[in-house]
Image (cartoon, rainbow, N blue to C red; front, side, top):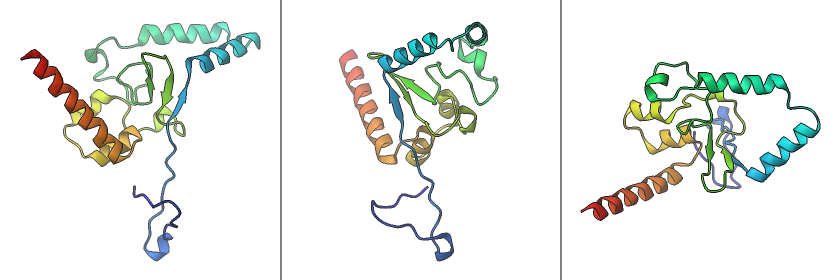
Length: 157
């Protein structure tokens, strides 16, 4: 997927250009927003026994280890797993960031970070596409992670 400078018009496909897909940005929901929505749904009577039963069923089926899910169905529907790429939870605030607000989970090529890691080395562009981020942002995250690893190993010596 190529990017066009702001304000520039992409060339139409018949003029040698390629059609550009609009990439939707991630969306973060605060814990307060989610709690407010749950209260609203409870007051409206929208949280019912069937929903609660579905949640209990999912909890019993949820894989607990990588061995439980390595050969499981893909895409992985367990979005609350810390390795799932569909959403991220901030451990400090409890807010949830939807990485792909314009897609449903079954529309993603990869849903598990562990599946991506087992694939082996991939380019920044490929990681960016998988994570719904730009190549530059992936480079920044990689640099920061490597710096943290260096600091951790320096502290151990």
